[in-house]
Length: 96
Length: 295
View 1 (cartoon, chains in turn orange, brown):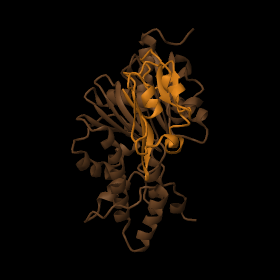
View 2 (tube, one colour):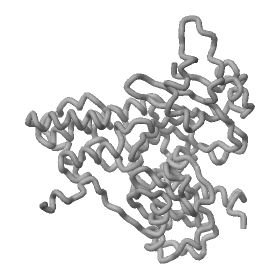
View 3 (cartoon, helix red, strand yellow):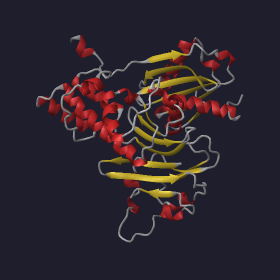
View 4 (cartoon, one colour):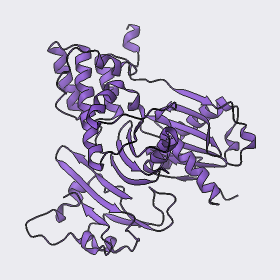
């Protein structure tokens, strides 16, 4: 499942997408993100029939991604985003 | 003050129903799903995964009472009380405040599953236009979510916006859709999708001599555009179903249809029930899996 966390407003799109089929709940993204955007839950709140842990974007963060993720906004030649780079299964992607 | 001034035009009709063909005493599992949304609350009671009763009410200022009222509204029609329920799942905005819920689930999972029940297994794209958010969901033939996107940051394109407009132009919420289609020439949509600014703009249009119908048409068109932007992001697949109160608004739906370029699926059920129905079905699935209530 592609879980798109975030929103669209008049200033643009702010989404973090987690491919839950690839996510194994290893918590690498939780430690990689210095802003504490991610958390790993034992049960996927969007898929009650799944039994493995899964990473999600915290509820209080998902409506503020435009600001919360500001330090990791694209600039020329910026290194891969820490969360994207940390995920060995390439489950995380962004709309920016 | 005249009666017209006292009328709450945004108030939609509440309803409840019980299935006379099912004897719930013979059912193995009776599960309830309670969807406490920002504007409306629904309770669906199912007997072994079949719709037994439902109640659809307006959410009050306190979630626990709204949940209880909706459930009692459904059970009243059935002539039973809360004790018949084996498992209860809460969903929607107010889900953390459903006192009788054994567990909670997000509305994403519940809406996909509920749409699968209400519209049938051909559903692949579910669009839920609720009171204060829009959800676009793609799912498989079992109602399992494969892609979802929810915009709950902004009230543009949601039911609450329509209520504001119904109040502004003095047209009952049930008539907004039909009245908006009663225009000779489709006007330009209002430019801002923000409800507050759109209302300001519409006030200006009314002062400039636009008819009520034209203003409603301009707003419905803007809403359809706004909703389409969101579903376009996840991609539209055949088997397109709309849930939530907005599915009852012809003004928005008939303007959305040419954008989507697909026929919308039809159902005999109330489209507002999808979330609660999904929750009740998950309750049934969890009971069968042995994950039911610990006695």
